[in-house]
Structure formats: structure tokens, C-alpha cells
Amino acid sequence: MNKFELKNEITKRTIQTKFGVITINDIKFDSEEIQNILPDVVFEDNNLKFMFQKEKIEGREKQLVLKRFLPNSHETDLTQFIENSVSRNKTFYSFLAEGMLGLVFRDVYDFDLSVGIIDITETLNDTHSGSDVCMFDKEKNVLVIGEAKFYEKFNQGMNTIISDFTQKSILNKLDSFKRKVESNDHSWEIILKNLKIENFETIQLDKFMQQKMIFAGFVLHSNKLAMDEYINKGFYDDFNVSVNQLKENIISSIESNLYSSEYEIVLFHLPIKDKKTLIKKIIERAKKELNI
Image (cartoon, rainbow, N blue to C red; front, side):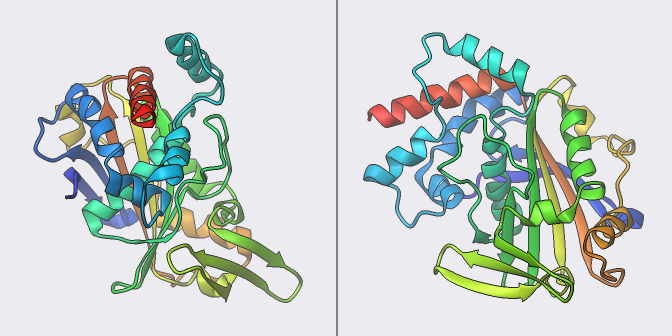
């Protein structure tokens, strides 16, 4: 059963961008209530299978998945470990947001995955410059490239994603869901791996970028506002982003004319009560599941 749903969506047609706040169905739209139910949602077997692209989630496979949520070492003071980790790295535990981005787009738009979201070999402190999610809907023929952040401050997370889309090289974003990028004076090719059927597909980069694409951003963040603020129509007016900015950035990266390409930007967020508290709840839940 799908858990995530849109509470409110604001469409800004002139810049071809949608903003929206996510909630969880059947509970009150309250950051503390959302925080309390999230561990149940994340550790539901079907959601773990979806996030990690597993046909089944049992035995050693489930152990590896659960350990992905845990620190590498046995922390005697979990609260202090989380405090230190967040103070050193504002994006600490962002892999949780990366996994949830896939779940959100599955639940809201019924998108399926083309390439896996989370690499089990990474650790809690690993960061990368690539895209966090790649999803493809065969019926609608649309590709989703996603960026996800887990911040204490909503504006910081949203602005970082916007900067990633409009200022950083698109080649870095492609790097996380392609296995290889080959560049020379004549052509660029990328190789995509479909984890579900173990197939590889080779396509030229400029042709790949001419597909219908949604650039999806998702911010999981601590809540500092009254929840009703997120439903205010003018709440997202201060964020400077547009599809034209996105296209200009991509064109500068791959030197190809993509002005006629059909792109859309979708920026969603989910407010929880407190980042550090949620991380502690998730780690404690993963330990409990692992012991079981």
C-alpha cells in the first residue's frame, strides 16, 4: 500500500517547475506524527525491496540492507555520535532521503525504477556528486533524475538541490546511474544498467538528454515552521529556479543544443520534527530488526 502522498502542489508554469509538500496518508499532517511513523514506513519489507532493488528481502540480504542504516563501529553513545556526525557533515544520513525519493515518486506518480537507488557498499558518511535516483516509466516514456538531501534547514536543502541542477556539471549527475561515460572528440556514450533484468543499454549522451525528463528534488528536513505555511501559495516564491536555467547548464556541460527538449523540474519536501531524533529512531529500529 502506498504511504506517501502530496499534501499540496504548487505549479509555476512560466518556469516549468512544481513545488509540493509530502505527507503520509491516514495520519495527521504534523511533523512529529510523520517522524514517529517513518521508521515503520522505511522498514516495511516491500519498501526496503524497492529502495535496494531486491527481489526478496530475507536472510543475509536483509542483514546487509539493515546494516546500511547503522554506524560502522559500535557506538557507546548513539546520541553523541549523531550530534558529532551532523555537526561535521550537514548532509549526514542523506542516503535515507535518497531512498525515500524513490518511494515518494513511486507512490505519487507510480514511477518504477530503472537503476538502483542506494549502494549497500557505501557507509553513512559517504557522499557523491552524482544523481541519487534514476527512474523510468515505460508507458509515459519519461525519465526521472533525482537529487535528495537530508538537512536540518529546509531552505538550505532546497537551495542546494537547485544549485546542483542549475550550476553543477550534468556529467557528475549522470555518473551515479551510468556505469561508464566515454568521451572523445567524436561522441559520448553512456551505459545504463537495468538492475531488475541485468540488461545493459548503450546510448549516446546527447540523444539520452533529448528524452522527456523530470529533474526531481526531494528534501527531508527538520521543521521550524507551522505546517500550514507549506500550503501557502506564495511560500515557494523565493526559490530561483527554472527549466531554462537547467537547460543552459546542461548545454554548457555537454555542448549540445537541447532547447527543444521536454524537461520539467519537480521539487518536493517532507518536514519531520528533528533530524537528529529521526536518525536515532531509524538506527535503533535497524538494530532491533537486525536482532530479530
